[in-house]
Length: 90
Image (cartoon, rainbow, N blue to C red):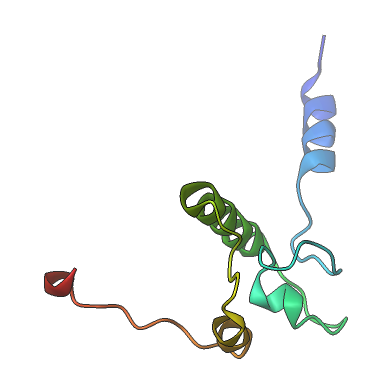
């Protein structure tokens, strides 16, 4: 039998930290804030969303993210965002 206090304690051990520090991952799948990491900033679960998006990109296109597009990768690292076309042009 699991008591309420034990449940809260076990859940708290599973919860991710509010801010994470560290460096690791596969180039092309790492969020820009991890690529620019210098040891002081913290990042959160949004970096996982970026990596998941890159995984979906590779599944759909059968190509690695930013493969052959070094200029785009550098622009993303510098904080640039892609321009979006108006819906009528799609």
